[in-house]
Length: 391
Ligand SMILES: *Cc1c(COP(=O)(O)O)cnc(C)c1O
Image (cartoon, rainbow, N blue to C red; front, top):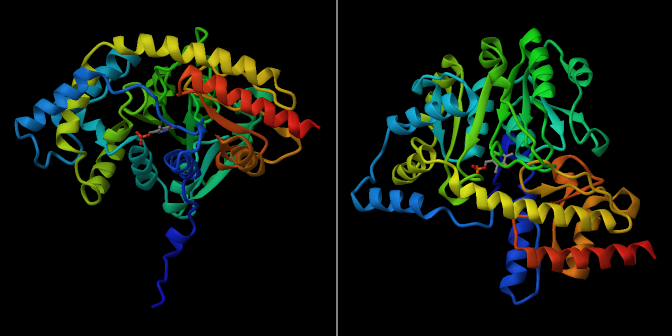
């Protein structure tokens, strides 16, 4: 049998972060003493009140189809969140709840991009963006950045990259994989250009609440009605509520785009899981009290890991202001990222994700969503590894 794979599917690279995580977990299961820095998820449990709300809905028989874009009270509560936290007015019809923030991103790209369109993606990027663009038959155009600009694009760089075919810019601040954060002024400058040039922005704000060192963010949609009309905000429950396995994301879009996404979703996944939505409703209507402790813990680890990484010969590392990742530069080790991470796993049983997965081959991603004990142990091993390279 000749299993002919469609060009669309064959053009994709499978998710390297999920692959590394799976490999580290398998080594661990086989009894090896692996330290995993690959995780793209918080190591805290979902807060109990959220689990209780979902369990209660499940017990009460809330187990049937819901409207495909989410239950009305959740869409309303999400609209209220944008009003309360971002000063943005959306009707519930502009809010779509999907099966994870990743699904929200995919819906946006599928509903707005097609063959012939160019999508601007600053690198280092979240590894799914270019693949999603390819799935929509559009062309990813990568805007390179380095640690010298804290991995942020400049207005000049954006302006130079825009062509008549440019359809969409993907912004992700705070960023996965670098943890870098655009200031409100920087965000506005980028938004201004997109408004002027008629380019849409997909603003992935899933790490909105994970900020350190007094950093602040302002959604690109919030600078003027024109900015809002050019922006689709993607968000989700995975990170700030530690609900990665629940598969719940959401987006806020101009009405015609929301309608198109509703149609796409109604013919693909239909609604996100009914009782999970009840948990999400409890999450988004409650104050973010649970986050305070998490942020103290993340911040402590971030400082420790940054300091340690900065002291290791061959490595340098700009400190992150958001999310839960650091993105150290390995160019002085003489190794490219795939080699570096493969040898690190082999020699020291430390799992980290090669930067090439995010379009940046001179770096690797370290997630500090793991215990302080793991960080201490793993960073010692990374230091030992780098010292052997330096010899
Ligand atoms: C984690 C993440 C998401 C969403 O993840 P889901 O688990 O699908 O909700 C979206 N964007 C970025 C940049 C992320 O890191």
